[in-house]
Image (tube, rainbow, N blue to C red; front, side):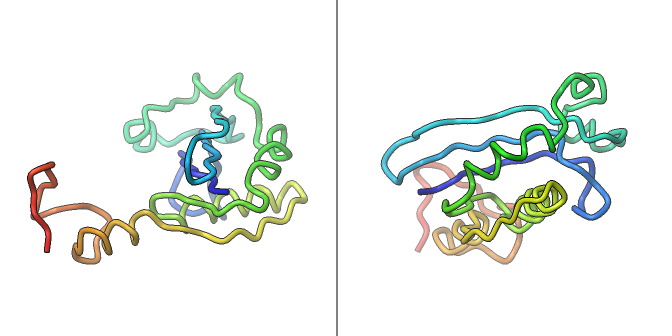
Amino acid sequence: MYAIVDIETTGGYASNNAITEVAIVLHDGNRELKRYETLVNPGMLIPRYVQALTGINDDMVSDAPYFNEIADVIHEWLSGAIFVAHNVNFDYSFIHSQLKDCGFHLDSRKLCTVRLSRKVFRTPASTTFTGRAFTPSSSYS
């Protein structure tokens, strides 16, 4: 089972920031089984630069659930699944930290789509594809 995860946060480090949005798609390797997505009230102000980057502002999350209100669902969905994300250690660190704060333990195998894409497309060690644009007619050897 794969849990494909994407989050938005108030900043770059789990220790000083919080999740503002979480999306999880459970996939069995052949098809999508179910999907969960919600805005999350981070319990702190979202910095302006993060608002510009994510499009998520304080008004949007004011009535959203706090992470502790959805932690049981997140834990249930992620337990036993391979945690898949683009730059997986970022997403995993936030989810792991916030679940731990709520009394849950998460110890998932991880699959990073950044690393996977570098192997597939043989790109330099960067989180962005610069230098060569990928098009359906592009040829990579």
